[in-house]
Image 1 (cartoon, chains in turn orange, blue):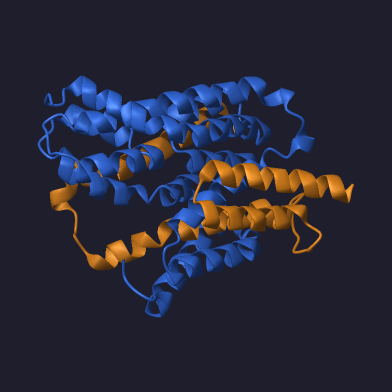
Image 2 (spheres, rainbow over the protein chains, first blue to last red):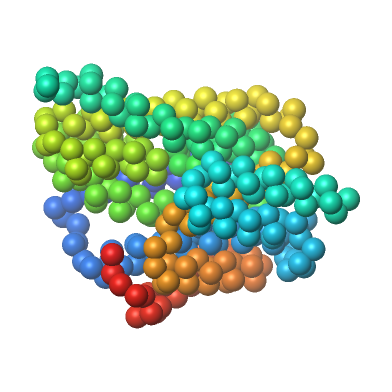
Length: 108
Length: 233
């Protein structure tokens, strides 16, 4: 696809993102204060993050692989444990990368 | 004690944001590397950081561009990925009421996960002084600058980092850290697990609809699992 398509798609993504952020700040009094809407919104972050994480772990070379030999699976589980215990983003990334490198070194 | 000035509020916001840059700067650099690897030209990787300005959505944008997803699907998916910012907008709105339009537009543009997280305690629990929005400007401007510079650094270093280092995995790790912080109830965990399970087969769906379908399934699962939650926070 060409440069114009890229620019227009990116600008549209930026506009959508900006309007979401502007929504209640600018138009709060016109927007519904509906508990059902907040109930749905509450599950957007965990659902999106779950859907973003799984392919990063289980898709290797364009194919889904649920093989337990996958070092990314164990490194990710290490990261979940560290994130849960420390609630610290940097500690989670560091522990996950160290676990992945250690596992990859062992498996070569 | 002197009343807070716009300047002192701004600097306090900068100060509150700086520790968060420890996580944001590596993420920005990795996004720079990953954007190039996905097939975006260098200028587009750098431009997306100011035009879209949202880390996880920029990663998704690069991935969808890399697989030539239709623009309408890309824009919709980015909208869903960033939908959580509605919550932030609603949370800060009451503190920004009465500000001129130019302030509302500027602060809405800067309203990201990390700027919001660092500013909310001040806005919600601090004194209701007339310049408190300058605190949010401080956190937002600091994050914005750190994000632009780290993306640029990633693009410049991109080709120098060997693929064997598997640095792309740190994107998944960042998402894992954010996910664990976002899970407070059993139904939150249920939403994440169902979305993760659905996305793998859904990746084969036409037009790269997989992420949207998985997110919808996860949200539905979270709503259905609400009755198993122990308490409402």
